[in-house]
Image (cartoon, rainbow, N blue to C red; front, side, top):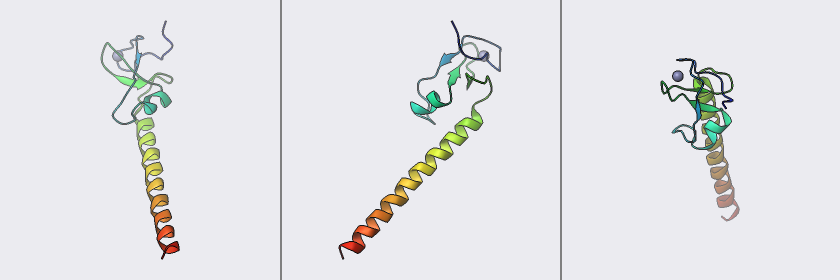
Length: 86
Ligand SMILES: [Zn+2]
């Protein structure tokens, strides 16, 4: 039984779910339905059957913004704390 879209590279329908990627860790491939074709090794979006590149870029950018936002908030909190305790 296979619930994923056929491979855009070779048309194979035996795609497997990718559990971990360097760009998204464990959560990224889960969100983007990232699957990999065992016949040609092509990784793609198992829902749409298209390349996941734009999704990966979007995910990475979103993640960068979240991390950047956290850093900004942390520094703001630190600055506020320093002002308050002076
Ligand atoms: Zn394939």
